[in-house]
Image (cartoon, rainbow, N blue to C red; front, side):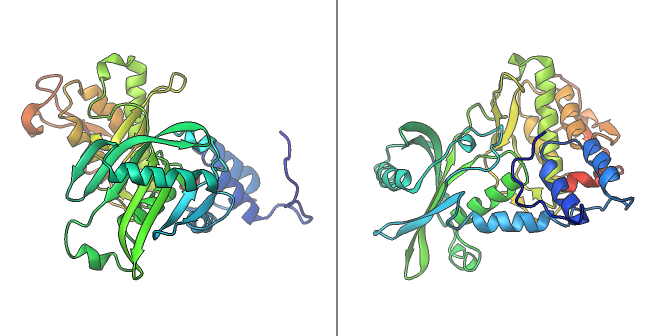
Length: 361
């Protein structure tokens, strides 16, 4: 192990603030056992705190940078009224995103955005979803001589009162941009945002667009589960459960964790990984088991979904909780791969325990 930068080396020994900062930085890689062992070695005999007091400040600092002009993000401003912010580079790439390993500059986006806007206006992109609430389109963007698969979301205000309740909290594209970086900073796998643009008139936002990396793979609702090796299939559902548990551990809840909002990203080394592609349903309030119950309900419609998959999902979400089967008559519609079987659910009288404190960092 080598020290790469000594700017923060100072006399006086290790302080508790230093330990908290190490705890926060290592929490993406270390297990809870590793973090607890480190705290016992460096915490000077103090009890393990329930939350890392440094984490909130680090998250807030990162979020402030995500809308500014710095090493990791940049601003765009065009004469036709469009302005916004784009992603430059990531300090720590994530395994679920290919673009997190790449770097972009302002000149590339100044050339790419007018072309992309023209293609959107001429309806030259593939339509994933189109409705009164907006368009979800798919296409490619040329950046730095390479073609990147992207998803373009252009939301619309479906109801008149949206014009009022967006005052002070931002339009949907801006909220999606901020929420995505909140999740990425907390190591929650979701589609990587590349660009957010707004067009204003008299200071009011009249049009918005957000561009995200297109995650390869099918949705969880359409995935061929039987084609997966049993161990990888079990790991996929356990990972989905862990993602939902982490969201709740961090003080959030996913109100729309249905199967169509997950992409099964192929990975020949780590195995199939679940990635969230629509995080509009994540709210900063904790509602225990809401997300996992929504996903369990949605997965019952999958013809290949079995009680073993349900059990793996619940054990990923609540590994130390007693799991019970639902009665067959309680399963809606009987849409099961194994007739007469019920799904596994955490028992209502045994809520998932509070995770070991180091994970909160």
